[in-house]
Structures are given as C-alpha cells and as structure tokens.
Length: 112
Image 1 (cartoon, rainbow, N blue to C red):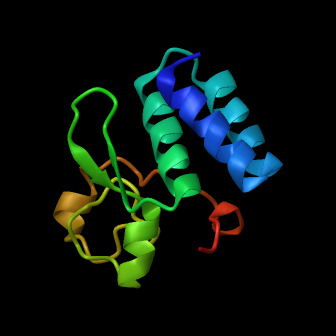
Image 2 (cartoon, rainbow, N blue to C red; image 1 turned 90 degrees about the horizontal axis):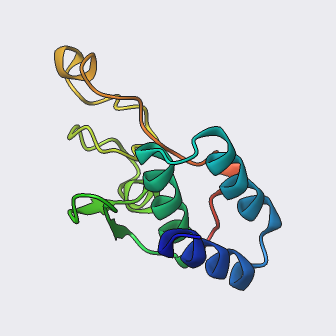
C-alpha cells in the first residue's frame, strides 16, 4: 500500500468511520494506479484528520481541502479542486475549462 493509503487507513481507524474506509476502497477499485485516485486518497486522509490543507501527491503543492471551503461558507471563485459549491462563483468562461470538483458527499464529511 502507498503511504497515502496507509495514512488514510490509519485516519479512518482513528475516526472509527467504516463508511469512509469503504470509500477509500471504492476509490482505488475504480481508479487503480490513477492520479485521480491518489488525489482523492490524499484529500480523504486530510479530511479524516480534520486538516484544511494537504500536499498534492505528485506536485507537492499545498491544496485546500473541502473542509477549508466549508469554513468559508461560500465559493471563493478561485476554482478550487475540492469546492463543495460547484465553482458557483467562478466566471462561466473559466468554469467551462475546469475539471469538476473532487468532493466527499456531505454525509461523509466529519463534523469536527
């Protein structure tokens, strides 16, 4: 298992959330050896830990999590990777070029 997968497994065990651990398994089953699976796993580990940022597994850049966006309570308009608001404040021309946000369903986001 990758370091990210081990971190997610440890975080999931610590949180006691079997649904989120199952989500990790679904991510990797649907996208084995895929960059998107690495991103989703890193995001999930950060959310489970209550972190507002994580390091992109390939670029090393700092990325805001869905929790950071929820703290703002509105879309900031920057086109964030994990925007739970569907990029609603991103100008339409730019939004059309963005990938859809990678988010956890609201019922799976832990309340901290």
